[in-house]
Length: 299
Image (cartoon, rainbow, N blue to C red):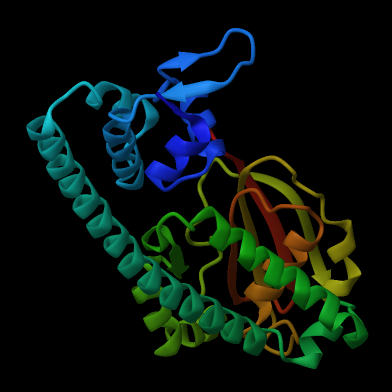
């Protein structure tokens, strides 16, 4: 028999380690003095200590170690081989995550910088801010809200950027690469300009027949005359902003759809649903606006 202090020196560890192994049932003393509580070990238990230490260093769990301790060297060698294969698979999985992370990070950076850059351009016309009755001193505040809206959109798609979809007129562009490419190629600029179309029809394209009219104003000169009267629609659904504008209207601007989106989002903590802005040239020489709404159906 040997004292716990002597056994610790033999094993090259400290007594706290041996007490821990005893407490979790891995290596119990050969004898405990009932009067003094002193622990005593047999020198041959050092072989068990070697097993425990190596299995623990190889990342075996306590329960796995307990099951392996009674086994011979062949059993432990096979267990080490299995653990090596598991660790190799785990390492490969980590490498895959690393590659995915780097790609996702670059995609996210490109997406954010590209869309924010596009948005800044859309909102850069002082005449449009004046049309909405917003002092340019509030530009930073409103733009920050637009950035928040973008962050919310990206947050909802963080699991896979390939789910991000942007609609250009009646054509949907899906996937981060396609969205970025569409913006960089100027497709959005082109789509924005053709919204004001001299050949525009009286009936708005892309608005469902069952969308309900929630608000409308006709014969106005500036959007600021009615923008604050628009109802706040807090339920999840699609909002359709339909403009019929005179050629002289200051609202005839590429940034109008983006501004309507930002103004809609600025009234709510979270924009639930989408906003579509449909614009064409008025045929009666007056400005018209209609807000239609279609509540989302439960799936």
